[in-house]
Image 1 (cartoon, rainbow, N blue to C red):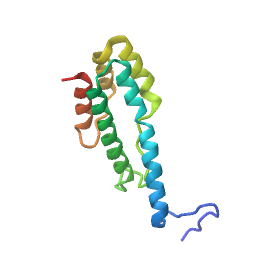
Image 2 (spheres, rainbow, N blue to C red; image 1 turned 135 degrees about the horizontal axis):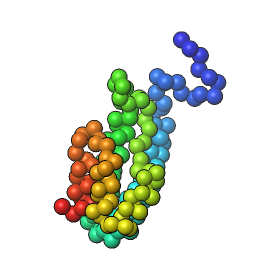
Image 3 (tube, helix red, strand yellow; image 1 turned 180 degrees about the vertical axis):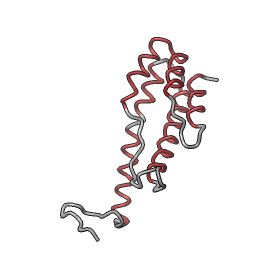
Length: 135
């Protein structure tokens, strides 16, 4: 059995106590909720309605949850086995915002379709595109 480095609190197969798990779960919730600002800004900036904002935020939460669960799996070739939150990050935000300013929802939808990677369930991104396009 390999020795654990001295600075490592929990090993790979250790289970932290319940209070620590609760605190880490709360940390994940705060981290994921702070990333929901980006979809709100994006849809609000292009003149989206409150219903569109609500729909995009709801689907973003579902997609983050599905992505986090998929990341936590330990299947061969799929998932790392670590609980890493899948977040709505800012790396694609500038491209989406530029497309939305130049051509509105149709151009942003085209951009998302051209770079879309279907999620594991095969349908979340299609629902999000329909919500943004209003169809």
